[in-house]
Length: 170
Length: 381
Image (cartoon, rainbow over all chains, first blue to last red; front, top):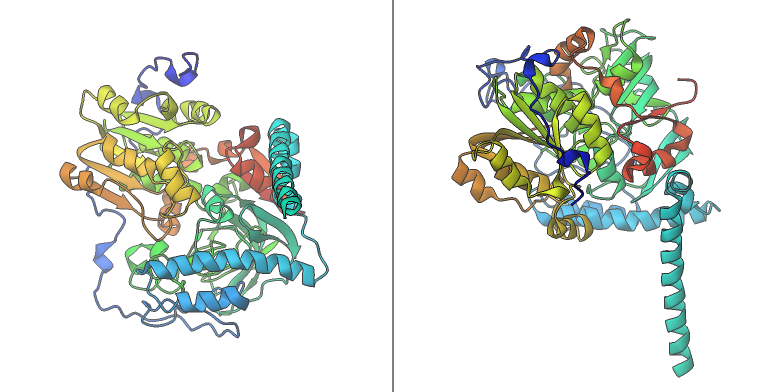
């Protein structure tokens, strides 16, 4: 515990009257459901005048909890490859089922590898340090960057040494 | 066009992508003029949100200039400068009719629990976001709001999420005059919640975090009493400073990446066996008084978290939570900015070219160089 830490110094109570705009939105009628729901327009039908349905030529996965497809859909990055297959399987489960979400998280990790392979297929080597913001790390946290680099090189060296030792024994 | 491109956890880069096109009669295409990185973008960046696909463009806090309109959009014209709320909302479904624009039922095919959000994974609809030179804006006749002539773009871009979310956190807390409000998290949302708590008549505003530079900022900006949770038992402190009762209101402005508990960090952030670390929510529940209100705007994943729900029952708490319904709040918030009650742009610490998006994410994620709020600037913006 740092006694010089400013947040540990005794802090005087702030006089609300000195705060600009104090109380201008105070509302004693703010009960636990006001104002997040405007109940005057509430109905229980589950039907409304629907917007025009967006037409799309990409695969859209859909929650099985939906009664119908929402009128607009995002068309970014349709499912593909092994991750896509796993996503399709995940969408057979409801949002209430842990397998749905774990399947999607697993697909995300596979998708990351697919992304690297896709780069290689396009004859592109991803500049991973740049993608991870190494330049900013160098600019603002040189010590941290050096420590991380040393740690990574150290781990690689240890793994290499262990493998070499195993090979010699064999 | 140039756009941010997600490659996997902790990896993003700038890519050339096709220009977005009108896909629905109520779409607009906007040329992006400002685009923030949000703390919740970091949940995507860190791989915590399911169905975050490689190749997606993030960004749900952006302003732009209308470049093209679908035939059904009558309330905007080409050339309008617009605030684009982060919610994608139809304005006519069961939920939008009640002002719950964050819960639209016509904008997210992949999940029913949340409406569509720009650039926020397929769990929030699979829409590309605004960390790009151009963006497709569905339901452009509902969400986008023309920026008043007098308003600075830097103020406007923070009205897309930060200000409404901080304001709604205070609003949902049902703050009454003289209430003691404790806020967990001194990121942009916690800072704004502290500022807005006063507008609702708070008598005391207390903020916890572990980053001294952020505590220092909110101490002056809120203003607020600020404390570093590393220096104390948060719950005991809150009881002591409120004559043994606890705060009237607690606000969780952190969400799933909270520090402060090795156990929660291991289970949630490292092993991903729960939806991140819920220690801020844990503290909020335990430090509010019996019969108090806990307001949650921190973002959590869709699976589940370890929280002391028994204490919620035993203390008779009211739990309130939602994504901000930006459109509902914008008219009042614009008035507050004009009156000088809220000065959003003071939160911006970094203006970074879109070209350097990878560095921007790393600076924000690693809290380098005193970063509170980074804004990405597309070329020519």
